[in-house]
Image (tube, rainbow, N blue to C red; front, side, top):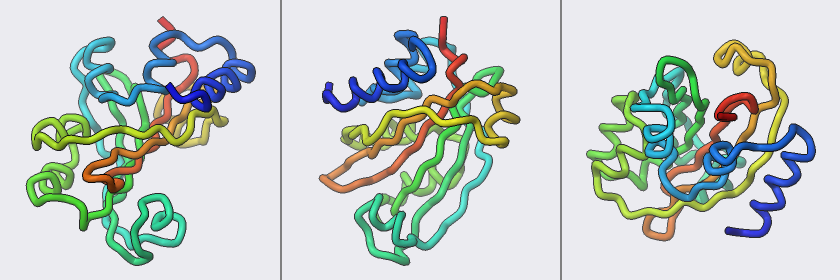
Amino acid sequence: MEQSIIESIQKVEKKVGKLSNAQKILLTTDGSVTTILDVIKGHVQIETLEQKFIEADHKIAQLLNIKIKDIVNYRVVIIQTHKPLIYAISLIPIKRLENGFKEDLIRADMPIGRILKKHNIESRREIKSVYYEPPKPELKKIFKEDSPMLTRTYNIIHNNEILIWLKETFPYKQFQD
């Protein structure tokens, strides 16, 4: 594992407290979060809070290595069982998607990990950052929790291009068992 990710975990622990093994795995995995959650919490579902097509601004274009004004799928979901587990935002450049993948994505309620598996898309995950942030009002309401939010950002790479940029967030008090 990259030294910077280990250092990021250590910085988070200095500020919010010791992280459980499950929290560390969820923040650092370069595999499917959906699969990990299925194993530790039971079969997970997706609730889509928002999904729309947007034009890439300068920041999004840089994140995805695309042109300004390229069309991007912006999706906000909650990965959940009987309660919310992870809040996730994804940015996906439409021009890099095959039609079947695009259709499953637009249907909205399928986790990205399962879409990748269904379409046999060979990919790798590249973790960009691991940190914590104060809970925003929306996240306090979703998780019914006031603890710091553990967050990571990463890219899913396919054919040496960024297929998906993701930000995943969950409360520090989550996954402590």
